[in-house]
Length: 456
Image: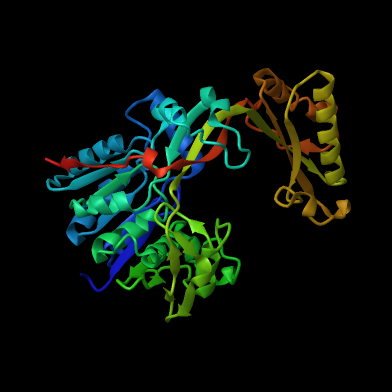
């Protein structure tokens, strides 16, 4: 058993800094590179891509990135784990294998973890009595069944650990929890009993800190952000030990910062009840976490407690929920805010007059209340140089949303004065991808772990 392992975060989402993974493998020593590409909306985007082309459905940045990573990772024996396989992990593995072959890397083992995609099993699952009721509304999934475009259960760390046990150099998964990517190598390297829920919780917390990339190393930081080097920001690394403790750090010489404040902010990210952080692997108690300053850019995390996992997995489903459209105009001083507000009233009045049907119409004023809405403080209109007003509409009726787009440009010559900023042409309707969260009994989901094969 190793005394410790170093697990480095390489991506916090699909679209994160493209060079971050390469910097993680070249600017210091690590054992594992984990890359989290998936969010709820990402799955639906990938599913739509796969419908158009059966060879797609994964994060398409991965093959190009692997051209840079594989030679370094082979030389330094760094193993890669990613959920960037999306809704088509086998196609992703095929693309990575092609890159390895092109590079002359002939002994690469790629493992694929699947079984999370339950779209094609929807009839079977609902017939079994599991109606995948919406966790917010309680409605059964059958109410939107014909509109579904994706449905994936969140798998945990165990299938990834099994893939590592099989000797995989790269593990490519579908919808796996962000935390599971980091917990898995700890289970594999330290031989952890998956019924030891304190250890499972420790690895889960480490994964939670790594999952958003540089958000744990100063990115999006509310503290002394002005003092940080964001140009060369480093990504976080978990130095994990067999007893469940770990340090969060980053490569020496990189920008950003690792301290109790940056780590604490990330720990608070996207959690509900801190006593019950639920994953497929355990329930972690975030109130048990102890943080200690362990030196420059180094925080020790320890004493984490966990409890048995629930008998359910979360399902993230997406369905077509109508159409939306957005448009922006800019009004200048004097009375910029007053003009922008009046433009919204005029637009809404015209839409109502011509019978446009919509479920939601919104005007937001960028720079004033687009983020905070009614909580935003009042402004003296005379002090505002310009205001961007962003109009948005949502409707189940395509033609109504289309007509909304036709009513924006006319405001320039038939509304308040001193207006500009209309760019990009007439806005067109876009499909709304609506979110459907549900629970499914674990026994209805069977993870599949397979080696893609040695690359020859």
